[in-house]
Length: 103
Image 1 (tube, rainbow, N blue to C red):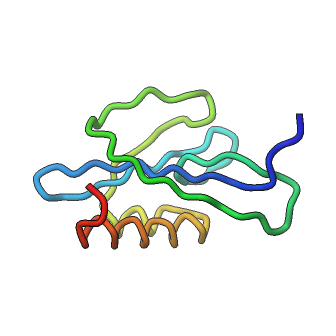
Image 2 (cartoon, helix red, strand yellow):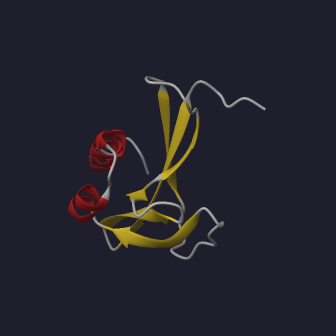
């Protein structure tokens, strides 16, 4: 089955004691850290749709696509993330949370 000509990005976050932390995942097939992503391949430019989810729990079960995950503050996540689209999405989600637009 052909893959969609778009990509989705899911940013999982948790707010504990007024601290925002983001779940960043280590891929099993590459040594990179990223948010949960899926969708299009073999395209030079594809739209990416980002979803932010306040998961309310800090323990998750991983699929075989990822070997590990860590909860990180904004600055740490920004440094760990490999892809610019993840960093831009992180900035936007972080800004919206801090402005009270996301809970």
